[in-house]
Image (tube, rainbow, N blue to C red):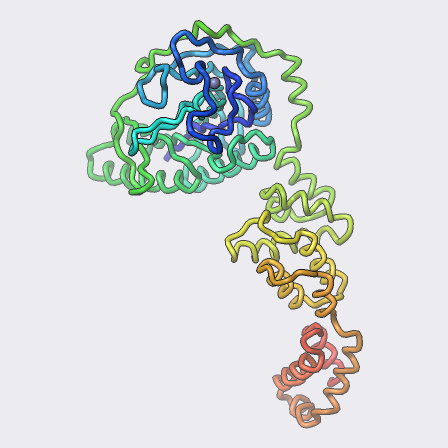
Length: 445
Ligand SMILES: [Zn+2]
């Protein structure tokens, strides 16, 4: 099995690729962020290419280790659809080639303009999105399972998040996936809008192609559409070649030279990338590689870890965040941004770390905090803080229950549970049960 992607990402820029219209298409009134250029009106002339778009596209290319081309051309890609008033989409020749993310080779990156949005049901078109900058990232078909495809898309998403180039966080990707099975032709699935949908579409397509191959009918080369509602792929067209689009250089847009000094400036000022941060966490804080990985996979979580790492044992803190906190968040279907008090999380971890509260109390406090049941975390920690005189209580209990002690000494080892329970009762649960057991065992031996 071979899987490859063409991934479209809208770039975070103030204005569109060839006009000054704003890019917040999803928030604005329909058809309010438009001008003659992005409406494709006859006689309108595009503005010079948006430099911010080129910079952001170059940042992505450089972080993928790609070779940047010295010059790009904008081509007209012709097709007919209501969301494209000019009848062509402007798309660049490759801005950069030959990169890599993990084991997947990146073939090339293009800069393009987004079409508008057409509501097929209502027959209405909104051109707010028309002309927004996109990059298209084309991979080689290097993925050999749905799991590998998912890992790649998640890693790419994380990279784009670190670079800060994503325009609209709720539609990070639009993906065209191509997939071929041994003995079959390549099938392309168009316009899948999330990582979850990519997985579903690939699984569906793998089954469909397997069945065709097993029945001897064969898989023909075609383009299919992912029908999200029905969870199936549907044939769009049987053959598609580059000629169908009648690519031609856009005569309104002169070739764009890529300044080598800009490339060097961007290369040296790239932010810390996820894999670099991971290695630094291992090196600087001594956390395990898998823990460091979990920390960098949520950018805000990793940053919070680092903010407090100087005030607590970093290893303890990292484990607390990635197993305790993450576990409670996953159970509630939340992510880190939903934590009501980040400082409260730290105070709880710190109190446990310093032995002021038990592990059980820490877990309980954390749950209460996430469920919004705690206002003042410090006061709540005070209520849970462990009793100082736990040894006295243990001694009291041993004296108060001679018959249980007798049972234990006669070999009924389970009798100790009764004593532990009594100590917990007398300390109202504020003693560390494991330590109580240890003290009892010592005293009774
Ligand atoms: Zn415009």
